[in-house]
Image (cartoon, one colour):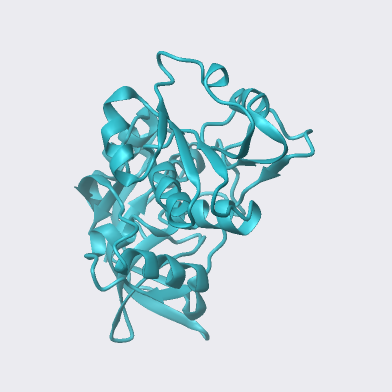
Length: 289
């Protein structure tokens, strides 16, 4: 099968197209025929060594996917040494959820990491509810544009930071207020919000604390400078077929859609990484074998 492996940490050039044998599943595992694999910032951070993994090179990236297994269309998220940048991937059976029927494999593959990060942070950690005000940083990004919709689905008032060219896009998804972070300081525009979801990191943490209510919650998915505050919560995405099934319900109800910025062939994984690493991708990038 065709796959993209890496033998060393480094830039996009370390992503190497290879031809390897189709893997054999063990007890409790399933062989998935990958039809599409999502690309996330975590991928290039692992590739470069910015984020440490449980295993040294060689390894294969690709932790979210959509494809076919045991006669059904499935999608899922699984952190594995030999990931979904390939024609086949092996995962535990319990991490798989039925693919939303209304989505093709490309759009389904773009969902698991970003949608679970948004869902588990907003609903699982923060317990966001109707009437609360939530500020979402990088609202047009992969996690951000899904977080906007998930927050809207529970009746929250959604505020987002994004470039001006993405404001109409985000209004259509349910954002009530938008701030162009290139032209305006969000700390001068909002105050007393119930939840902030920081999808940028760094100094956005301490700045976000300035606009957070005394009993509010600051969600951090990137690593910021606010970890000493009692209102701070670090979010680490977890594989969950149960949560994916709930996300699928929103998709099928027409209340959640994923934006795919570009679809590239698997052989262009290095290009996809360069695009992701450059930033400003609206929605998600997807690879197809």
